[in-house]
Length: 130
Image (cartoon, rainbow, N blue to C red; front, side):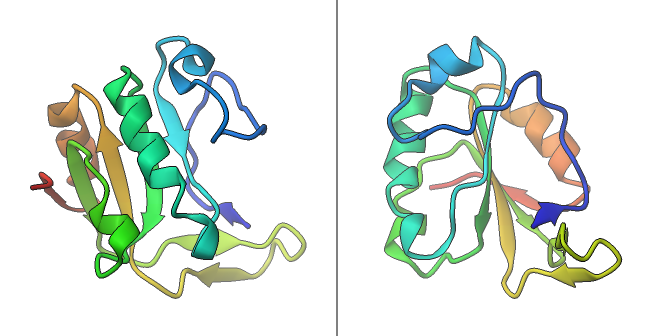
């Protein structure tokens, strides 16, 4: 599935992001993360936290499962509580659109949280995290 709105990336990395150094891979650029959902999401939270501590600037798309341990283990600068369901297109059926069955959040780690608030505030409430 592909998200209907897009982001511009200077490069795409499709390897095992859990084993890589995101600061080196991004070369000082912003990193966008959409990890696999379900039971595979848990290891991505400590990885994002540690990469942010090492200097990576990250925007991630996660399910809004604020009642889970993994969600509450995040330590981002800001969270955008997206106010609609994210629309998707199945690449095998491009004429059909579907939406996520759950709420979504955009999560930001980094120093430019005021800019994140300005841009993402148009899509939902933006809050600090603890």
